[in-house]
Every structure is written in structure tokens, then in C-alpha cells.
Image 1 (tube, rainbow, N blue to C red):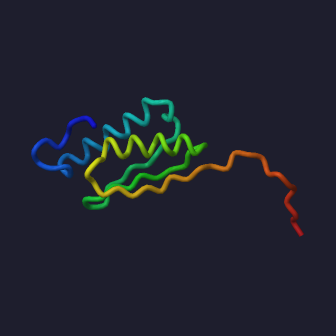
Image 2: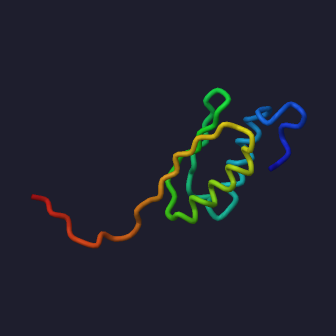
Image 3: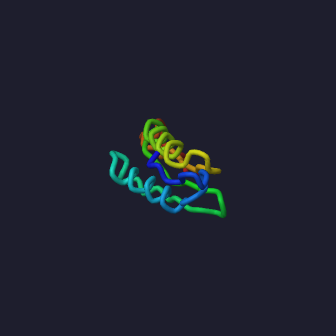
Length: 91
């Protein structure tokens, strides 16, 4: 974690912590994902779509580290990138 919050508690400076998370995600190998990070009162929601389960775990790890102590809700979906294993019947 980047150290924001100090003695004021984990909810202090939420905007700075969110900015740190967004910068961390953008600077890493997951930078192209375009995760949305929004505040709702004292809670934070992180949502978006990632290509693999590994990418999802990396995003969740960063979220846990940067936003520790905050109420965080995640809605991170894994995109289906494999070709279908059968043809679609359009009858």
C-alpha cells in the first residue's frame, strides 16, 4: 500500500488510494484493461472485464493491497476468448 491514511484511519484519503490503484493497474501488464473504480459513500466498486482468470487474480491482489481496510465490491468478469466448440443452431 502506498501509505495514505496515516493516523486518520483506513477510510481517509480514499480518492488518493483509488488514484494509486488506477495508476498501478495502468502501469502494469494489465494496463489496457480499463477497470472502472468508483466510490459509493465509504465503499468502493471495481468493475471491468479481463481476458483470463490469472489477470482477474492480479487485479484482485492489487485491489486488496491498495484498498485494505475499505469496503470494496468487485465485479470483474473473465471474457470468453476461446472459440466455440460447436456450431450455433439458429432455428
